[in-house]
Length: 80
Image (cartoon, helix red, strand yellow):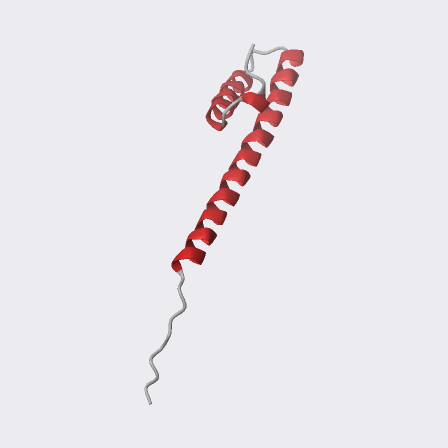
């Protein structure tokens, strides 16, 4: 049917989530199929949120690393 969320990229998961939302909004799924789609959507949402959290942590770490390497002690000349 579809890729398992654990092996999908963020973009794949987001596209699949959009597809599921569209199907649910159309209201043409029977109750069981709607529940299965909803469950998959919840799982995909969690995966996307985790991927975004991981990306945010990586960016934060890169910025911190950049600030650490670019900051050099500033020695003020003694004005006396």
